[in-house]
Image (cartoon, rainbow, N blue to C red; front, side):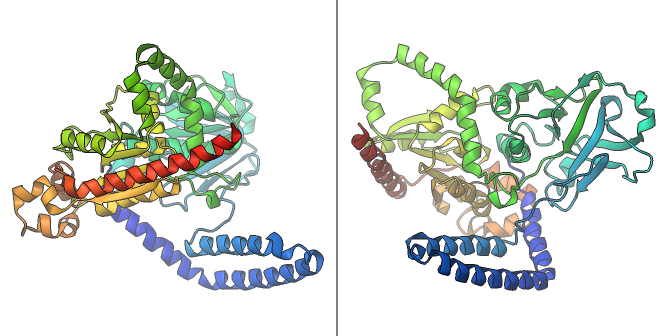
Length: 494
């Protein structure tokens, strides 16, 4: 379950960003004036030199460049190299400016000591680098969960006493230290707080990096090992379970995180990466296992019926048990089939292989699910796929923020289906005039426990299928048009 009390912090983050931006507005104006002057002179020079070609492409390129710069300023995101991107040998640099996570970078003679939860940096006595403490998890602002995360000590020591810790394992590539504690165990948090930040932090190493996990879990490696092998060529190191002294020349402690389930290319100094690049990593990670799944399926189900079903747009319903279940799911399946879809009902649990879920999502044209952590699987959808999120009462803001907006950034056709009060099981329980039905925001304002008990744990959905039919029909038409657009170029190629 996504921890909704973080919403307050998220609002706070936006306010903090605005505050910082106001303080910096003077410098921003000066920078903008200099930029515009430089831009004008550049255009003028360019016109003299390239006038024969100017209107062929240059004007549009410059306008696009200026547009991107404006977008960067309006979102209060500085397009600058991150703090600690340049670190001198024999020093520790910590970036604590982020509201979501701290990052420390060490360079020099680095040696691990799991018994004391420490990383030692052996350096000269003339160096004034101070020791640091850090919890390498991306929910810095949420005290309750951070209290459960193991803290690491980054300690400087005199290089003349380097014999204190003799290297048992020497690594000639950098290390990234991070925790799989906290909310790990929830698929949303596993991707949002762990896997995507790991990609952001390590992608520029081109797999020449060692991942050292604090609070390591066997099941985590089994579940996400396929992805990890696309980010690193080296075996994982269990920090607490491996008592040997591991030695590195460079280490990043903690992970960088941008926003909910996304990658912001303007914040990555090494390469212009986006969430689409992360999804490409997933494609590569699961491709081998998916090939074997296809082989198995071909050997067992090559019937006329299955061939016919593949001609239809495929719709996947992510089914829920317990709270926020679709009470008339069987009728929804029937309606989708009548609309023209081939329907698959997916009921993943903690034991379901990730490649199997990925294949179901990756081969679908439409995905339907009720708001909750399982919506994280929209990351498995191909761009231009339709993602329909059913939004129960009291979850509008969270549904849009955690899944709706990130889905659009991935290039999906996102549809947020906000249910009517009569479609909620709470309607019969509380009545139409109760604040639970009439004013969900007033209940959410009382705190996380109210939201959790009433809207997350106490609510199911019974879709008005006459109303939902229009959403299905639009999704079907969109999927057919997309297929036609994709098939036409193939006809010319063949």
